[in-house]
Length: 404
Ligand SMILES: Cc1cc2nc3c(=O)[nH]c(=O)nc-3n(C[C@H](O)[C@H](O)[C@H](O)COP(=O)(O)OP(=O)(O)OC[C@H]3O[C@@H](n4cnc5c(N)ncnc54)[C@H](O)[C@@H]3O)c2cc1C
Image (cartoon, helix red, strand yellow):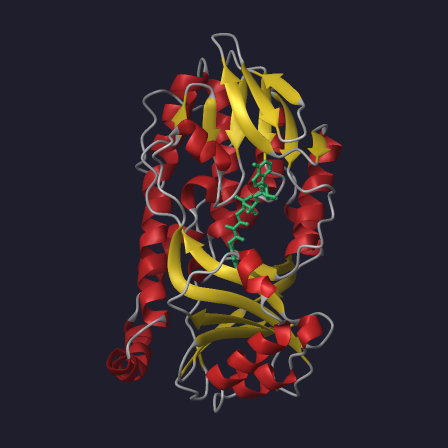
């Protein structure tokens, strides 16, 4: 039984509200502190939640609410070098991926957390901490402070908490690609439950049908130059559209999607990140969760699902083990191997998305053959069939055997 009674959760994205709800379920009072000034921060874009992410949301009672605002994706296809897409094999008996607008997901997780009793404070950018034997104090940029037994860093891939835990912690790695998302009125023969991954002539993209009938698409633009979100957004959207139209020229349907996307519907994401292994997941009364400690890159389609799983597992460990130190150690043991294995897959996909000209030619021949020969169950089953038994007690000796 834990001696931890209260928690400050830094970050109100995906991991934060889920962690706070799960902590409350574990008997720990939790408040979320978010840097943005309001709940609705105009965040755009869409993401797909994997079956394992939805299963973990079930533990905090948020799965139905998320399904009700999402579009199920039952078929995935891949196209190489502009050729006709071919269907990728799926995993039998698993529920579909769920495609959801990021803003809607944030709202659903926030509402579920508030209904459970979690408090939220906005305009609270964490800048420092003071740690003592009896608790921890968070210091915010507006001069205010908050106290609790522990502090959970759910503050994303550019985490402040990560550097408070370890000033030498690695920063977010760069995948070598900039991200964009657009909507286009394109007349494509495309079912609403189908996602297509397309390796175009010069760059990778993916596309799907949105609930409003338009085509949503995401572009991964190879770029040697790293750009933060603000740097990328300082460039006019029309300039980016010109670049995207040149990059996807001749691709089907990438060419049409780029041409039909307008400056108003183009979302500029900036550099796409991937976290290298983080040596210290916790120190004293502070611990990391979500992208702050394991961002496997957008290429895996698992970042949000991993963040949700880790949030729930952290709460289980704090529920069952006596004090932060043994609980954080058990949490890292439960999670590290799994998230690093998925990140390794992300590294491989990112290499495939940014090949040189020779590798690109070889890939367009080899990849369809590789995918046909791939044992989906062996490759993806462990990732997507993962579930968390909330009621099972965690012990200091719990091992990782069932986690990967
Ligand atoms: C283009 C793109 C596509 C993606 N597609 C998918 C997908 O299809 N499927 C998938 O599973 N994942 C996807 N991901 C990854 C997914 O978005 C992340 O893994 C997920 O958002 C991680 O959640 P998080 O809560 O850890 O971090 P975030 O969502 O980044 O939330 C962190 C929060 O912390 C706040 N914050 C930061 N610093 C501070 C501070 N100092 N004080 C207080 N608050 C702070 C931020 O404002 C933010 O609200 C994608 C990512 C990108 C970029």
